[in-house]
Amino acid sequence: MPETPVLTIAAESAFLPVAVSFVKKICQGYGFSQKETTVLVLAAEEIFVYLNKLNPGTMISISCRSKPYLMELTLEFTAENFNLRAFNLTSSVDVEDESSLEELGLLIAGRMVDSFSINQTGGKIHMSLMKYMGYKEAAATGYTPGPMVSRTIDHPDPLEIRMVAGMIHESESMADLPFFFKTPLMVADMHEAGDLAALILKDRQNTIAGGLFWKSLNRNTAEILGPYIYGQTGASQMGEELVEKCLETIGKENFTGVICRHYGHDLPEQYFETIGTLSGKKIFFRQLQEDTGTCAWLHPSIAADIADRYERLFLPRNIIAPADDVRPLTPYTVISSEVNRAADTVVMHPLVLGQDVLETVAAHCLLFQSDGYQTVLFTLDLGNSAHAGWIPALTENGFTTALLVPYGGKGDLLTLAYHHPNRGGK
Image 1 (cartoon, rainbow, N blue to C red):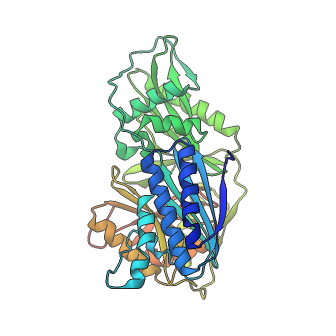
Image 2 (cartoon, helix red, strand yellow; image 1 turned 60 degrees about the horizontal axis):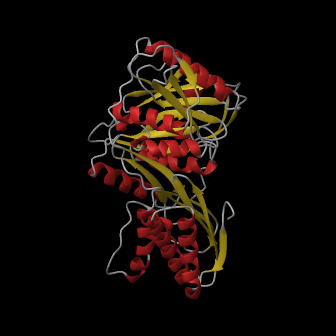
Image 3 (cartoon, rainbow, N blue to C red; image 1 turned 120 degrees about the vertical axis):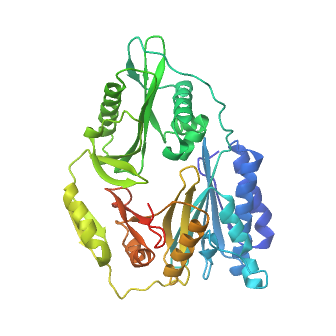
C-alpha cells in the first residue's frame, strides 16, 4: 500500500459511495478503530456532499496519511463561494434558513475532528482534517523510583518510554503538560513515529528515575519537554546533565534554537533566556546557531513593542509594515481553535482573513469567556505577510503581545493574550 494513497474523482452524487469507501478502507487498513474511522468517513462525506451541491462535477483529490497515533485526511479542490465560515467554533445553523441548513454538514465535519487546517488561494482550497487514535487513559502504576546506584543517560526503548511517560503523567498536572501525556501509549507511538525523541536516566539495575523529551516545531526550532526527575537526591545536577546531552544532540540536527515551555523543578534555567510568561510560567529559549536575520511582517500598532523585544534578544530583524490600503477579499473569517480544558486555555490560529475579522474575533472571545476559560491566546507567524492583517482586529479586541518565539513558524511566532476589559486577564 502506498504511504499516501490518493483518490481524484468528480464531486458527483454517483461517486459519493466511491469516496466514502476509499476513506473507510484506508482507515481500516491502517488499523484505526471503528469510532475514529467513522469520524473521518462522515467528515469526508459531508464536505463531498456540500461541494457537490455548490459546484457539481468539480474535481476533488482525497488523500490519507497515517502515523501510529494519527490519521490525516486531506482534500484539495477548486470551488467558488465555499463557505469555510462553518469551521469556526462560533458558527451555528439557522433552522429557518435553507441555505444555512446546507452548511450543517460542514459544521458537523469541523466539530468531529481533533484539529484541522485550511489554506485558500483564490478558489483553490487545501483542507486537512486530523483525528487521533483513540487511547484509554492509563491506569495508575504507583511506581516510585528508589535512589539509583549509579546513573547513565540513555535512549529508551518503547517500554521505557511508556514508563517515563507514565511517571510524568502521574506526578505532574495535566495543566502543565502537552495533551499527549494523558496517555503514555500515545507518547510511545509518537516516539515510534519519529515525532518525539527522548533521553532517560537509569542505572545498572534498570531503575528509571525520569528523563526528558523533545520534538521539532519546524525545521528551525525544537521544543524541549522536561527534564522530569523523581525520587533522587542531587536531581538538579541530573537535570543539567540531561539538558546538556539533549542540547548536544539537538545541535547536531541543525536547529537554530530551542524553546522550553513544559518542564519540572529541575530545569537549569541558567542554560536559557526568558522570552516571556504565559499563565504565570516562564518560557525559555536558547539560540544554538548564529541568527543571520529574517523579515518580520508587523502592523505599526505593535511594531515598536516587538522591535524592543528583538533588541533585547539581539535578533537581527527587518520589520516590514503591510500596505494600509489592502482589504480582505473574502467576506468571512475562519479561525482554528485549540482547546486545552485541563490547562483552562484556548489557543486560536488564523486560517482565513475575511472582512468580518473584527466581529469574528470578538465572537470567539465572548464564547471562550462565557465558557470560563481564563487564558485565551492568538498566534501569528511573522514570516507570513497575510498574518499582519489580523493585528488591528486583535488589538481592538483586547489582545496584547505576550510571547515571541524566534523561528517558531515560517518566521518568528508571536503569541498575543486576551485581556477582557471587565476582568483584567492573565
